[in-house]
Amino acid sequence: MKNEKLLAQLQQLSELLRPFQFGVGGSCLLWQLGLETSPNDIDIVCSEDDFAAICSELAAEYQLQEKASHSEYASKHFVRFSRAGWPDIELMAGIAVKTKGKIQRWQFNPQRCHWQNNVCWMPPADWLQLYQLFNRPQRVAQLRQYLVQLRLGTVN
Image 1 (spheres, helix red, strand yellow):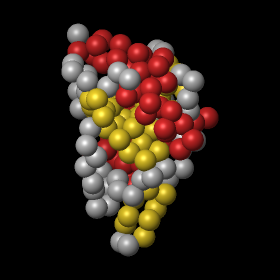
Image 2: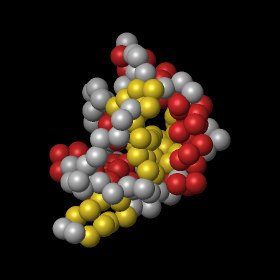
Image 3: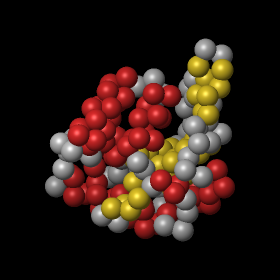
Image 4: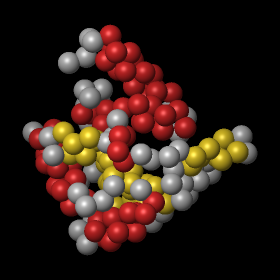
C-alpha cells in the first residue's frame, strides 16, 4: 500500500512539474530501482533557470520549511517543502559541496532524465556521482553494485 501511495505522489509531483526541467532522484530513485524499501524524502533536482518557478508551483500546495544550513553543502539553491501525509520534498539546483576547502560543482543535465510510470527519473549514474559528492559511501556502494549488475545483465 505504501509503495502505491508513494508512486501516486511522485506521479502527481511529476505532472505538476512537467513544464520544467527536473528529475526525481535520491532514495526515491533507489526505491524505484529496488534498492530501498522506504524512502524518507523526495529529492528533486532541477535546472537553475527553473528553480524559482518550481518553488512557486510547490509553494501553492506545500509548506516551505526553514532552511537548515550544512557546513559542507554549497548549492546555489536548496529548499524543503512539507505536506501532511507526504514525505518531505527537497528541491535543489546548482549543486555544489565544499571538500577540503574547495568547492566541487555538479552539473544537472535534464536530457539524461527519463519518464517511466509517469515519473521523471534521474539516471542512477548521476546519483552515483551525487552520493560520492555528498560523501554517502553506503549509497555509493549500493549504486555501484546495481550499475555493475546492470552492465552484466543480471538486473531486470
